[in-house]
Image (cartoon, rainbow, N blue to C red; front, side):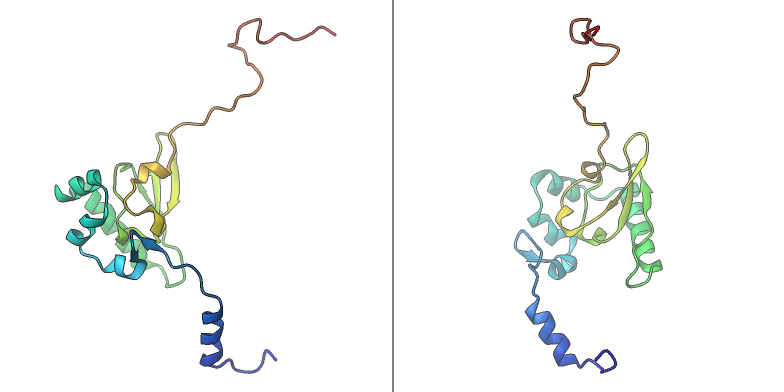
Length: 153
């Protein structure tokens, strides 16, 4: 059974049978989103991002985008690109960055973020948390005497 060559019609039928939900960013499909120009993308992002993009990409964000392009070109078609380290937590995620790996600095370590289509319009810093969330457990050394009462037996 495995030795038989699989024809293209059978593969197409399987694909048609298993249709997944297509990603849309504010009504635009992913392939059309990647083809949008800089000016056309402005119509689909929120006001703060629109203002920032209208004022132009500065030298450091452009350098990051160039490094991401280079990493994508260097890897194979099915491989993940190497993560690019950056401190630019305020960098807006644009469609060109989709399926890239960015290591975002959180003040202590670089957290690797795999950029997905859902992240377009957000900032890189939103995906690299800068604090350790509070874990409410037993009282520690700095607590008051009444809150750390331990019975003798």
